[in-house]
Amino acid sequence: MLEILFLIGAVGAIGLRAQQRGTARTPFVAAALAGWGVLLLASVAGLGMVGLILRWLWIGGVYLYLIRFTHGGAKVEDRWQCPDCRLFNDAETLVCLCGYQHPGAPAEARSQSVRDT
Image (spheres, rainbow, N blue to C red):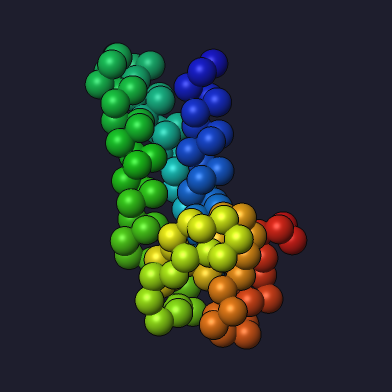
């Protein structure tokens, strides 16, 4: 039961990070859940603790792929600090976790907000 709660939190973080980067979150959430489900079935078939480790490595791998290799197209000059919550964001993150939109973001990227969804 606890693993399901962690899975919901991890998939939510993947979806939120994809939205912040200006990419579609559905493919990343679907890939994370599908891989987790396949590895869960493999665990039931006899992998045991190795299956548990592989499931969470898969979730971490999807998140790391999202951070490292995806770009939503819109980007600001450099790493920036949110004036509301003082959180540092990378150049591809146009919307802070608190919902503040970077003022230098392109107009098409500024139309979506974390607070609106």
